Length: 167
Image (cartoon, rainbow, N blue to C red; front, top):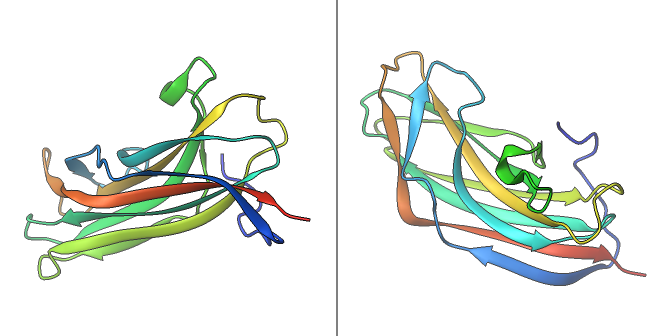
């Protein structure tokens, strides 16, 4: 599910809390022929949120292409409910536009930077925490089964701010 509105004018934002991690969880991303649902979780952070508040997320990670051919890498921010009883198996909401770029053999290393603001839905359950996740996928027409690009540890950081609109 993708929110209908991704650009917000937050008047006099008040930062209620900031949550950060530099723990890059993935070590490899499988390369495929373009199936968009083979995402790897790069970084994640848990944020206590309330309905109507905003989550401002800013993150980056880095990948390395040692395959000898161009690999398209897509990255984006997602969010899911940490406390719904399903966790990561439950519904995920993409909270940013897709970003993408080809990492060429000559480029070799490629940073994946992204930033987004997302309004927590009015239907968000009281007391539930959000998990904000930086995910990425890799694809190429030259891929072979078992091909992977490297996720460069410890290069990565994810920050999520809980924000309320001021008066």
